[in-house]
Image (tube, rainbow, N blue to C red; front, top):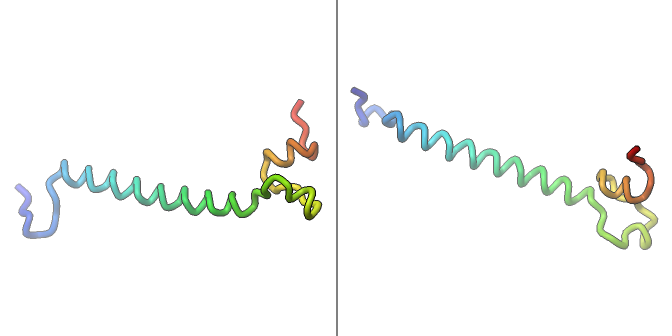
Length: 69
């Protein structure tokens, strides 16, 4: 039997904690990735205003820089 006073959790609570912790870490990584993508993704009209084509895959396909065969 594991004593709670040593700071350890019962196995079922430890699994729940580990899942929740992993979920929070993944959400933080996803948020950071989304922020980077949003910064690199030019908004509609940037091409007309600045002559820029977005650096994301969707913008390059729409502009014709990348052709899908």
